Image (tube, rainbow, N blue to C red; front, side, top):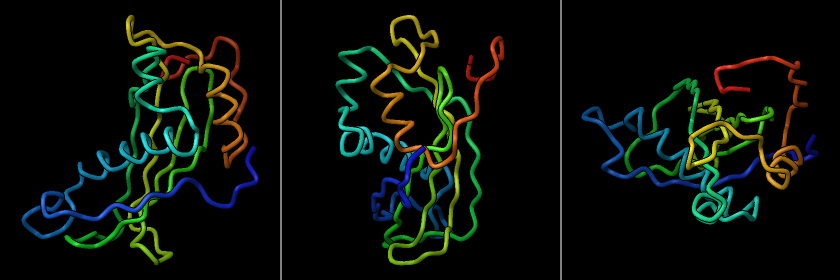
Length: 158
């Protein structure tokens, strides 16, 4: 388990195209931004370039479950700081939490949990998390990962 007090952070400027007619960030855009942060996290924190992982190792990371609470809107022109933390590491999947705050503020405006499976991109079958990635995830986990009972099957194929 990690001794970090914060996760990986990125700032995203809310663009006109991110907003709906009410002038607030349209809800599916959050998932797009979270995935951009996920890719940056691989490149800049895990030091495993996302493109290399996908193209050269042929390991992919489809989202298999999402939960998201929208607490307060973001508007065009504001900067959203997104923090990614690892909250669970399983055998063939892991879960990250994404919290969005107005840059410079402590109030969480959007709070999401995304479970990502690990698959072979050629067969699209679940595979165990590769050892170097598993170590990196566990090093960053903010919650002690539970043991997965033998024979346990989850929605992520664990």
